[in-house]
Length: 118
Image 1 (cartoon, rainbow, N blue to C red):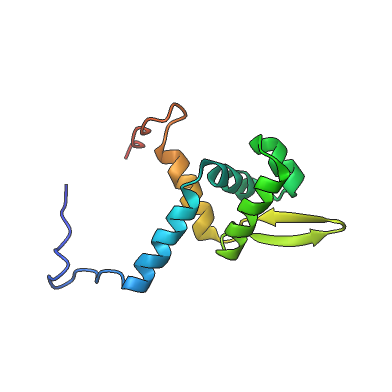
Image 2 (image 1 turned 90 degrees about the horizontal axis):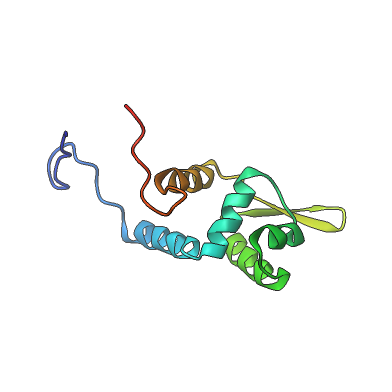
């Protein structure tokens, strides 16, 4: 397996600055909730309103609304009006990739999924 150069070697990628590390940690902390992660998985596949999300997640509307507010405040999801409903979506391709990769990495039984063939 090839090794990467040490952070202080020529050609090495510089480490992320503290502000970037903090923002990344806060994003992962938001996604550490199983309910929020479920909501994110759902809305990476299509837009939903809060009552439909609550039904799919098996959680109350008030709880889902609170989770959606946190995700929206963090910029992970968007909301748009559709008549009397608000539809929630993930439009950032980085977030869509992140959510997809974590579920590719974890098997349905909770174990680590095998690496794909090269």
